[in-house]
Length: 346
Image (cartoon, rainbow, N blue to C red; front, side, top):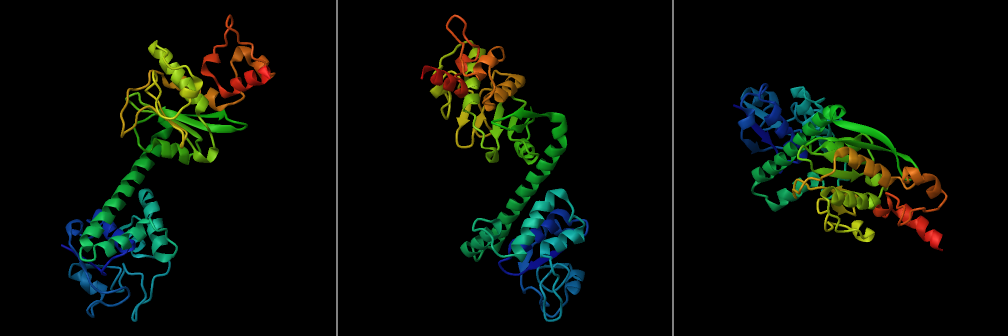
């Protein structure tokens, strides 16, 4: 059974190194996953006059202290280990330094340990704040940090798994946006990482349909897209699908939140997202199929798109919709159409 020793008030680096040892080091250090953690010494210095190898032979693993293999600090009798930190040293010892799900964690911890300039709410600075708030309870701080690290690790594992599955669960299309081509990815997936993976691959719009039928439409902030026309179309079509149209006012249909008759859709204006239920707020699934939603989004985000049989007149700035011969798109109240009618009245 091994015991882990590190210095008092360990930083994010030492805590991460201990987390790695306990999570991945059982084969090399039997029993370490259940070991207790004690505190003594400082970086680069022999502990009680003994070397780290002597301690390890007695079942004690030194982390960030003792001048051993898990201590990057220079000491009187030891050289430092440039461009390393305790976490990277542990990862290399365990053979997990190239584990994809650990890449972001190790990079963050190494940068935090070796370079100044961390943000106030970075995990590294929060660790220091926790030590100040709980000076006599280091175990509480360590457990809190380990929970955060493990959560981030699981998120990355899920992200990588979703990334590998994406090709079989999604459709990628290049569609016309406002003056440029943009990428839209849509698919059926219950993964919480689906949106992140699609955005990571350059998607400006992501449509995620869950197995429950609930469907979310996300946009990338970098693209500056707006979904007001999409919201109007979705809400009209949702009402049509139920056979009862209650809300027809275009301003209401484009408003934030929910509207009467199409309660299935919540419009979040700030993020330009249309949410048909969520993990925190389950809702009745949409009555529209995924193909219909794709078509609505394509029309809604392209300001140069008009009803096919009337496109030529629309492009000339002429609306030929009448009461006797109404345009199928008139009910949507698209911004581009209202502009044509407004200009015509002038």
